[in-house]
Length: 250
Ligand code: 9D3
Image 1 (spheres, protein in one colour):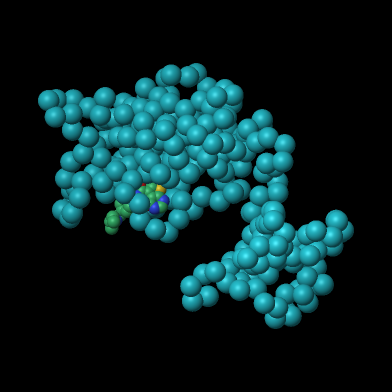
Image 2: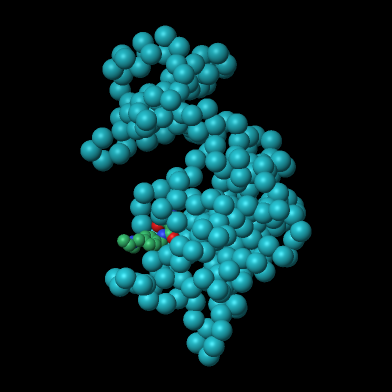
């Protein structure tokens, strides 16, 4: 898969893709990331990429032409069709399902804005899809692009090693993950739950499932509403056990 990134800080996005699971995918040749700077396509002594907004108001808006030329240069660098995605606070929120759909593409072109955003005429003419990564304010689209790259790359065939299965991930089954423990079994901070050391695989799977359900109920009731539970699981959750929330006030 090839991912092109149009950004005023393209090296920032490439650096974030240089380590961990995504870095390994790049090294294996499974994901190829290229940055394009609209400043390289800007004209004049000052190489302007932004200007004041029509209608007034604070901040600056990114100019059409440097972005458009950068997008066209990125598209022309490879003959395969490409899906163009604008990262913006006005986008549809990214989900695991959306990441999985994007992982089926052979090319993505990610457009990152700075300042107040980009001229809407460029969005209308060049963008296939507008994505947000959540309801909080970032300073630009670069961190969001890095999030998309990470979420998508790990779903490509051959990127995860055995044991890093994407299927077992939180959200793979629509629930939060269960708690995890490793050595030592006894520690000043507490003991590992006995069931995990029992060797009873059925009991362990049942305990993990109930932990996942209970956590999801406390922290993400919106996810639980969308999950399919058995009658027994509904009964187990109705029983007020002690699942302390680490979220202040929750
Ligand atoms: C505080 C500025 N806001 C004016 C009322 C609007 C605004 C413009 C540009 C807010 C953020 C940004 C920059 N953000 C992104 O480019 C962005 C983003 C985000 O801020 N949150 C979640 N997902 C994304 S994807 C791109």
